[in-house]
Each structure stands twice: as structure tokens, then as C-alpha cells.
Image (cartoon, rainbow, N blue to C red):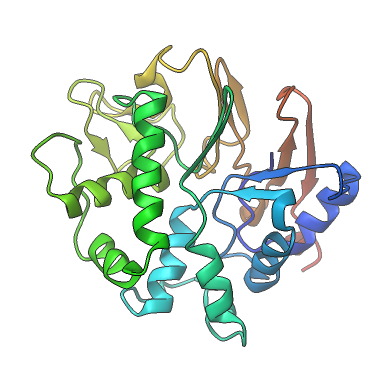
Amino acid sequence: MIGDLHGCAAELDALLRKLQFDRAHDTLWFTGDLINRGPRSVDTLRRVRDLGDAAITVLGNHDLHLLGCWLGVRSPSKGDTVHEVLDAADADELCHWLRQQPFMHREDNKVLVHAGIYPRWSIDTAEARARELQSQLSGHNYRQVLGDIFAAKSPTRDDHSLSPVERLRFSAAAFTRMRFVNPIDFSLNMGEKGPPEIRNDKAAPWFEVAGERYADYRVFSGHWAALGHRQQRWLTALDSGCMWGGQLTAVSLDSPEQNHCVDCAHLLHN
């Protein structure tokens, strides 16, 4: 299991050497956000794509942002490096591959997501919502789906009053952008992005709001660089901020306490 890459191809190569990765026998799970902000987005995307069945990745918010820019329903932000992918000769091929990837992957009691699992959902419900979203994005109507997702802010709560488009919007927000949740009404709090210790009475880390709901599972996530590499109870968080000068981290799926890290080489060498 490897945390958010954000275009850090050199660090990925170094980490795979450290792991003595053998694609004939080993499988890698990636927490999403393969691209953007780092120095080599297109190389990183090709590396993961070319691993074939030896790699599983979920979609992160930066991956969705790239797809939105590709289709013209989003504009690159300051500091983005998505142009590396968009300007590549194989941009369409890479983006079509990316839009086929899931929002959640589950094997037995191991669950992979980018941001987290909305605390009101059971694992079965989360899996169904992820499949629904993936089916829409990987289908023929993907242009309309991405346009709908980015056309308006997502609802902050999941309830039966949501329209089909709002339901997809909420699922995308929960799986790719969630950090804090209001523990009273279970609304997503997108205003807080700092460390989990910085909070107010209307914002608590999603995994604390979930309590022991997922105690029978091992959940792996990324997305939250300010949370860092953290293992507590049923959660292993893996975004150790490589592109921000931290490290790229890998853990064993069977023994998450066994971890391997490499430093952020692209900053050390500048």
C-alpha cells in the first residue's frame, strides 16, 4: 500500500527498489492522487497504468480535477502540473484509463479509499455508492457526469431528498475530498483542512465520528497530508506529504505496522 504520489515518479521508483518490488508476484495498492503539483505527473501516471494487474488505485480529488480539465469543465489552478498530462501525445489514452478506476476497493476486510468513508455509511453502503459513481464515470455518458459533478458545490449531507446528480456529487465529495465531519448532524465540513487537532465543535475527523463502526475492517486512506502517516485502531492513513517535502510511505497490507519510506528526492536535489 502506497500513499499519494502527486507526480513524484523518482520517489516511487526509489520506494519500489527499496521494497524489491516484483510485479510477477507482488501487488501495489495506491491511495489515489497519482498526479498534480509534483514534478512528473505524466511519468507517474504512465508508471501506474503500465503496472497492469499488479497495481490497484482509487481516484482522488486531483485525479478527478485532471479529468475535469481534460474535458474542459474545470480550469487548472495555480500550482497545478496537470498540463504535463494534457499536453502529452497519449493524454486521451491516459485519461480514459484513469476514468475507469474505482473510488473504493475492497478485498475481504481490507478497504482502500482516497479521503475516507462517510461515517453514516456501512462498508456495504459505501461500496454500493462507489460502484454507482464508478459506473457513471466509466460509462459512455462520462462527459455529462463530470460536468454535473463540477457544475455546483456538493451537498454537505446525504439524505433521501438528494436528486440523482446531487447524490453523485455528494459521493464524489465524500470519497475524494472529505476530512472533517460535523459529529452532530453528520454534514461534511470542507472549510477545515489542517491537522486533526485543529477543530471546533462542528468539525471532527471523519474517522473519529465513525467511532468503532469499521472496527472489523482495515481501512487505508490518503488525501490528508496534515494528518500524515498515522495508524490508529482500524485506520492506516498514508499521505505523508511527499510533494510538500515529506516522505513517500508504503505499508504491508497484512501488517500495516511494517512501513517503508523514502525522502522527497525532487526537493532534496533542487
